[in-house]
Structure formats: structure tokens, C-alpha cells
Length: 242
Image 1 (spheres, rainbow, N blue to C red):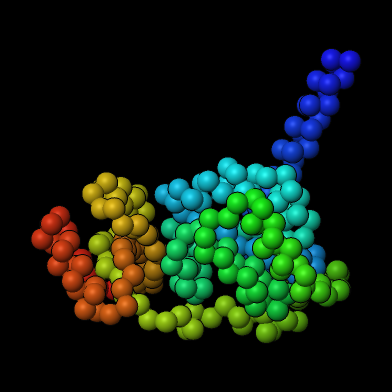
Image 2: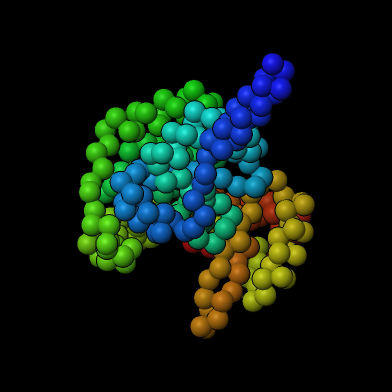
């Protein structure tokens, strides 16, 4: 009898572990196409490595068996690190200002749920079911390639336009041509400043450069105030960047 109970416990443990949320390992565009091809909704989890509530949700909510099974069956989930190059662009486009932020998209690329709080497993389940209640997946030609599918749905393809982002200002702490030097400087200023710092890649004279940025200010006056504070308190020079 005891061996049977042990085997049952191991089986339940295995099933629970397999129900953890299986986040898609790819970029935003391919995740969007995958969701369309499979007739599922797209779920984006915006996070950062320094975000404690994000880690709590990973360990608790996204590890919950019911949440994991529901997401894996009905959604294409993807994590977006806002400190990553592409993640930063998506963060700006969708005006993500707090973490964690969850966005759920329908098949037309429209945001149907925007959650800006830490969700428990029960709250997450309610959000997922609410989204699914109004979702009617379309049937696509499964012989179409991802590129053909993108071309066949122009409304979704043009949803992601950086020109729609509202202007905001940041402070550029450094500009480097070497990613290794960028990381060294990033670690130095991160040890001093409490505010989140991001690295953004850009192009200058045809070459890749890396910008170390901090803050998100509505006006140049706000940016200049913080710029002065950085100079006086930490002797850190910066430039206003938009």
C-alpha cells in the first residue's frame, strides 16, 4: 500500500511540474504569428531581473498547476525583459511604466486585458477566463508560412508602430561602441543609483552603439532637474535623450 501511495505522490508531483507555464522562446513577432496559426490568444509578461513582484509571480502564479494548464492550452505566453533591446522598444510602444504588467491580445492584435499588478493564482485564473470568454479563434490555412500569414493580416502587422509612442525624455549616462564596456559601466552606475537603468542599442554612422539610459520624464524641465541632481550628488554627467 505504501509503495502505491509513494508512486501516486510522484505522479502527482510530475503532473504538477509539467503544468508550469511554458513560456514561448522566441521574439514578439514570431509569438504573435504562432498565436494566430494555433488559434490562441497572446499573453505578454513584462518583467525585469530586478523586479521582486515579477519573481514572486514566477515562483507562485506561473508555477500554479491550474494557471499553467490554462495558459499552455489557450494562450501563447511570452516574457519580455524591459532591460533587453527589443523589450525596451515594446515597453515604450505599449507605455509600460510599472512592473509586472501583463497584456493579453486577441487575434487582431488588440489589447483586451492590461493588468498592472501582482496577481495571485486565483486572480490570474479569473483574468484568463475573462479574456477567453470574448475570444473566438479564426481558422487559418495551416499550409501558410508565417511570412504569408503576416502579409494576409495587414491590420495586425501594422499594429506595432513606434511612431505612436508619446514623447518622453531620459538621461543618457553613457554612449559606447563596445558591449563589454557598456556592461562594465552599467554595473558601476547600478551600484550607486537606485533607479532602474537600461541599455539600448542604436546606430550611429552605420555602426552599432549602446546607450546607457535612466529615467522617464514627461518634460525637459523634469529631466534637467534630475540631471542636476546626478551631477551634484554623484558627479555623474548626463545628456537629455528623447
